Length: 295
Ligand SMILES: [Zn+2]
Image 1 (cartoon, rainbow, N blue to C red):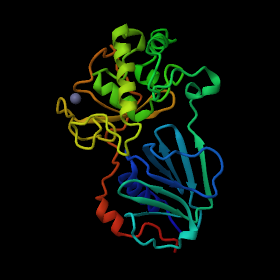
Image 2: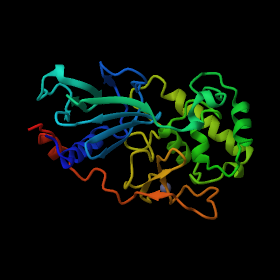
Image 3: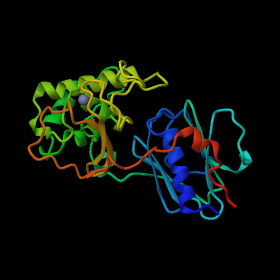
Image 4: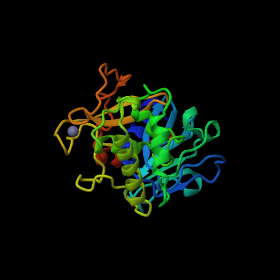
């Protein structure tokens, strides 16, 4: 039977294989309800006891509980699975890996609760994935945001201002515009709001038909900060950080060296997790070993 440390190790392997990657395949034949979509980015893998959760950047969460029988495996595409395919409850594919959950008794999905991202609770803003967007309307919604002390990092995810910006784009937009993530939306000028909206539209449109998501073509991997904690910022050389931020406590990647525009007078990131060991396991070593086994 899988113990907590087995699941902890499985989570570490899943992090290495999945986090920051664009999902190319999702199969979960028996799940009903909200499903993550192909093309979304995998944002977090959390484990607690025998629970393992995978979070996508649009806020969808897959919850699995291993009980006595369940296990997660990670394979290279085409590699032979060590358990029968008919026992696969979930298959998550990226360009380089396949993560398979076998025989878990509990497999379900839900949406991370964030009332401000819930379309029923407020009218949605213009959809930035469309070619023609009412930019002035987005700017108007951003400039009249209430309360004005809300951080721009939170406002970018609020689909009532504009639709389409998930967590990857939020982090990349803030880096591209050199805005401090805790900058208050009320401190932004009209031009700064317009820049954010224009750039968000540009990034989303550029990636509509791409398989790999690219927001910073000059950076290896195509993303400037997202998923790059501990690596050097391409602009200033400072190390990229990751924190949790906002009401929904989503992860936020940023560079404290160059994202300094509108730095709030009191910076109080709620929970710094820079020191959390995420992927200390060299992938090859972890994947070479069996991750379960339900013995
Ligand atoms: Zn920097």
